[in-house]
Structure formats: C-alpha cells, structure tokens
Length: 91
Image 1 (tube, rainbow, N blue to C red):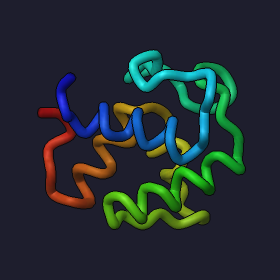
Image 2: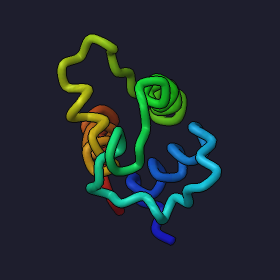
Image 3: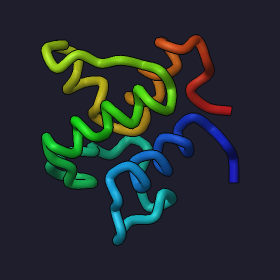
Image 4: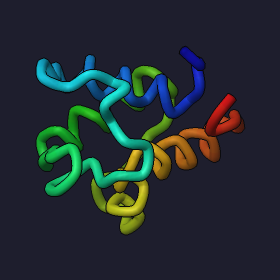
C-alpha cells in the first residue's frame, strides 16, 4: 500500500472517528465525506479537525468559510494539509 497523504488521511478518519464498518480502502478519494458519501456529521468534523491538528499540526478555525471546501473529500483534505505543511498531497 502506498503511504500517500490521501491514504494516511483515510486511515486517520477511520481510526479517529472509530468507524467500525468502514475500511480505509473503501473511502473514495473524491467522494463527499459528509451527509451523502461517507455520511459524517458535524461532531465528526470537530473530531476530525482535532485529529488533523494532532497528526499534522494543521489548525482549522470553526469560523473559516473554507471549511466546507476543505472537509469536502479526502482529496480536498490532502490538498489543504499539503498546503499548510509544505508536503505533497500524494506520493
């Protein structure tokens, strides 16, 4: 398995949110994470934001108008983390 940023994020979501019925490989990179798609909710968003801060040192603000875009999909999360950390979104 590639250790790309996208794969790391998929594992982080499954672990941080304790998604028992979801395997990281089942999460589509460009599918929505919230409501339709993976079906996450606002509580999951808060937990995910904390996990991102802990894992990657990136901080999001609850008032940031970009949050809907940032947390839309694995791809958008990877792009955000990469831009904040100076790393590449994929290997």
